[in-house]
Image 1: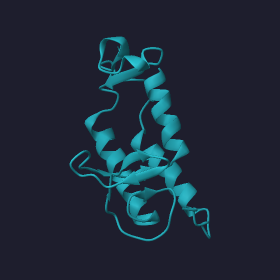
Image 2: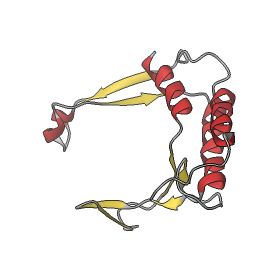
Image 3: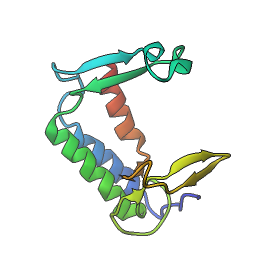
Image 4: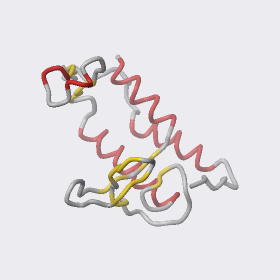
Length: 135
C-alpha cells in the first residue's frame, strides 16, 4: 500500500501538535518508571537468548496514555481505518490484527489473535516516547 501524498502540510503540523499535546510536560521519565530485562534463556524462547527485550512499566501518566490513544484514533480519521500515517480513506475504526503466517503473508486468525490495531507512523511522537524511556 502506498501513502497518498497530502495536498498541504496540515498533517505534519497536526502530528507535531499531537506530540506537544501529549508530552506538554517534561520528557523526563516519571519517578515510578521501571524497566525489567527479559532473560530469554529462562523462557520458552531460549533461541532468543542473545537478544533482549524490556518490559517497561509506568512510562506514561494515565492522561498521557489517554492522549496517545486519542491521537492514534484521530490518525485513523485522517488516513483510514487502522492506518495512521499511511493509506487513504476515512473512519476511526481499529483494523483487525492479522497473524504473520510466513512468506510475507498474513491471515485473520481470531482464535490466535483476537484484537484490533492501529499502525500509526509519527516520527515526532516516536522521538518523544524514545526520549522518555531512554532517560
